[in-house]
Structures are given as C-alpha cells and as structure tokens.
Length: 524
Image (tube, rainbow, N blue to C red; front, side):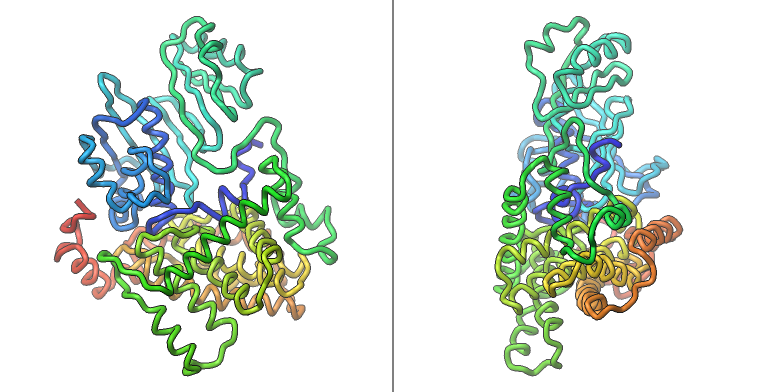
C-alpha cells in the first residue's frame, strides 16, 4: 500500500494549523500553490486558474478561501501566515498577472485546480485536487499523470525520453525512498533531495524541478502501520482492558517513525493552538466579510449569571465551540480537526471538557489522540470533504472523534470509545452541506454545536453500555455509500438546501455589494 494511503493523525485529522474559512479550500490551496511555485522554480510571472463549472469551486473559491490560500501559496506562504487575508493584493503588488476561468472540464473530483504558470520563457501546467481537511493530491504535471501528496521532497528529473527516464529512476532507486518513471520524468521521492552531484552524473537530463514536502509528517521507505481499520484493531488488541489512546500512540509512532514523546510534543502544540483560539474567540473577533456577528460573549454573560437552562458540560461546550468558530470566521489561527468547517465540534467539546473536569495535560493529550485515531478510521474508509460527502463528512466525523475522546476522559475503554464513535456517526448520516451565502458560518455553527451535543450524548451512552449495534467500520462504509449517492446540490456546492433560500441569496448579495455573482472585492 502506498505510504500516502496510511493517514497520519497530524497530517489528515488533527490539523492543519491554518487561517481561513475552509480547510479543503483555504489550507489545501496553500499547499497546491506552494507546489506550483516550486514547479516554476520560484514566483511565477503569470498564472491561469481554471475551475470546472460542474465542480464546487466556481461558486466557492472566493467566499470559502480558495483564492486567499492559493495566492498565498504562490507567494510561498504557510497556511497560518498572518498575511494570508491580503494575499490577492500581495500577489498583484508582486507583479503576478492572474486570470481565473470557468469551463466545462468534466473533472471527476469537485475540488479540482487546473493551473497554467509562466516564469520567464518557461510554461508549466499542474492539476491537483483537494481531498478534504487540507489534504491534496497532485495528479498531473506538464501533461504527465502523477500521484503526489506533499508527504515527500520530490524531484522531477526531466529526461530526453521515456527510456532515459526509466534508466535514471533505476539508477537512483537506492538514493531515495520512492522512485517512478512517467513518460519523460524520473520521479524521486525522499526525506531530502538527491544531491546535484548524483543528478549531474546521469546522461540525458533536460531539467530538474524540486517540490518541497508540504505536510508536517513525512512518509518514508518501508512504512508500515499496525492497523488501518477499527476491525483490524479489534482482532489483535484487548479493547476492553486498554484506552483507545494507547493504540493511537502506537499507530502514530509507527506512522511518523517517532517515539511517544515526539507524538505528545506535536499534540501539545495543537492543544496550545486550541486553547489560544478559545481565548481569542471569547475576547472578541471582528471581520467585515462575515454572516454572523460575534455571539459568544452573550452566551458567556448569561452562563455566568446562571440564566441559561442547566446543561452542565454542554453549555461550556457550546461556548467553546462558538468561540472557535468565530475565530475561524475572522481569519484567525485555529486547528482544522478534522476540517475548518467542523473545527469547533471536536476541539471545542474537548477543550470544554478539559476545563470543566480540570484535566491534567497528559490525559488531555491522550484524549485528543484517541479522537485522532477515530479520524484515521474515517479517512481510510470514507472522507472528510463536504464536497464529497456533505456535512456528515465534517461535523459527523468531528462528533465521532469528540465522542471517543470524551469516553477516554471518562475512564472508558477502547471498545467504549469505538462504540461512542459509531453512535455519533449513525446520528449524523445523510447530513447535507448547504452554507448560507457561500460562507462557512451558518448553518455550520449550529451543526458544530449539535455535533458537540451528539458527542456528549454518544459518549455517555457508550459509558453506560448502550449497544451501538453496527460496528464502526460498517457505519463508515454506509457513510461512504451515502456520500456517493448524495446529489451534487447537497454536497457543499451552494446549489441546494439552505444555501439557495431567498434569505441566503439576499445575505450573499449584501456581502457582495448588491451582486451575489462577483460584485465584491473577494469575488473579483
């Protein structure tokens, strides 16, 4: 199995750390832009971006952050760079000519980016897809089919012909982790680039492109993991006698080639970003291009006064989920876990539980890891992308992750965490994605909060021994099958559900200066 098909908790599930309204738009496009920049050998002079009229991007690339991220990536910025909200102006100021076109391209994936780039006398083409949660796949470079995921430093060694490409790949196979030959490219993937000396010793080299890795956890030669599905874990482990975090640690150590402390260190940084996001959200956020005003302060005031219905952990979760969603909607820094659109469900619910229970650091980190492992199981059998599976793919997965984490905090076993995750996803099957006014705010906020309630209820059901009936793997298979049958208009393309109601279209027009089809600065 290729390394990229073994998800990492930190690549695919709990991350990226980013700015922008949507991980599949804002963060993925940063990564695509950075790879495109590398393909050019630096900042391009001119860029043509093409989107398929039948995909999700023509209606969402401006309002959901694809433009912001792509332009930042072309400038070499990271997904959490404070300059990202101004990337369009920065690209223009850098002298990069930009054109965006819509065309009938019949791309199989709804989140497909087709880029043509010019730098000096050179022209390059790159086709890439955003697969959900900030993950990407580059599927074509200069007319050659490739399959690159940003998990390696990649050298594309352009040869004089296909035979020379195969010979170069074979000669360099012992110096890199993955080698391939496609048409005129020898493709070399590794933890670092092959030296200039070794490349120069090969006959027939026409040019070299160096594409740096864009994912935090890299793949490596002979990578293996102990399991990929909940059913595989159940066959070989004592699920009743150990917490799920034990297996999450085992998995991520194997996936990343690191020890327990390194895994904890990465998750500690994630926890710091989550805590900072909650604090920043409660302190107050503002943003001009926003559907919903700041609301968390009103909930906090009533909660402090005791004037809300008593709901224990749920009320604290509502507050923290809202705070994180407001940070996201103001282009602040947050963790997409598993996506930006669902960034409040898992992180906000967990943080609320940590605060209410007075959880020490290591148990908090373990709870986040337990939830992360549920996300790995989702990634291997289904998808996080709303464009592929609707909101069930985002807040449904986030609720399952949170439910498993809460069971861990409650002293439950791995079996109970898996049960809670099964309950939670069953409760979200079929949930569509229909963002009002093309912004990832409403009904997203309410669904993140509902996801928190789902997680809390599912965790308590599992801890009490309620029978989930359907094993998690089978629930995830149903999750995928429903995604495949879901109408395009219900999968985050702003063509159905709440997104096309008269009120939604009126809000969109107001935010776009009276024209919902390109009147505002974000849409031009």
